[in-house]
Length: 217
Image 1 (cartoon, rainbow, N blue to C red):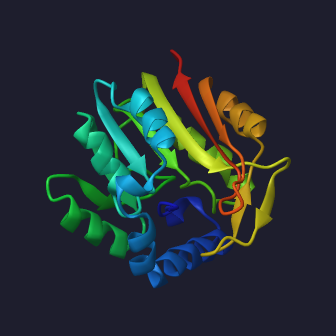
Image 2: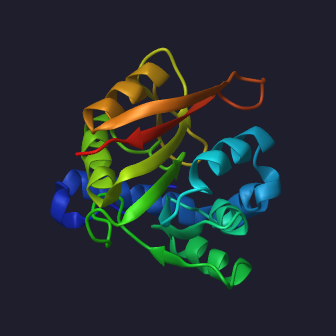
């Protein structure tokens, strides 16, 4: 899910878009949790990809747009000091009930309530997909602000030949070429270290994941 975007950094039209995304997910929260709310419902290759880049971080990890909190819980089961953040109250309530020993909070993707250089890893697993393309660089800059000099970012997204909107089942989303995401990451100071693709299987859209490391500033 898309974490809440702080109103001080958005135009009115963007704020309306965020409210629309939040309300759309809130309206299907129970169904979403049923379909996707446990780590067992995540592809094993995806869990392995996420785990090998974020479970070894020796500091705090944020799962930004954590949804029902299942991947946050998975990271914590691997020993990561992970906190889940999402803008949908129904998801946060479920995550806290399902993972009572975890940490989950409503939060802002573009105005994270953490200090500079304090986060060792960030997971943005399909949490950027509803973000208008012109806003991506600002979000990545915010991720960079909060991360330690050797931090790691993992992003998952819908893959495509060009940047473009499509009719996601919940609300409008965007597909990205993996090379374009990698270039945007590089602009923000991140260096790609691993990439994963999965083609369409007739049921799911093609998607990709990139792990990127933040070098010394």
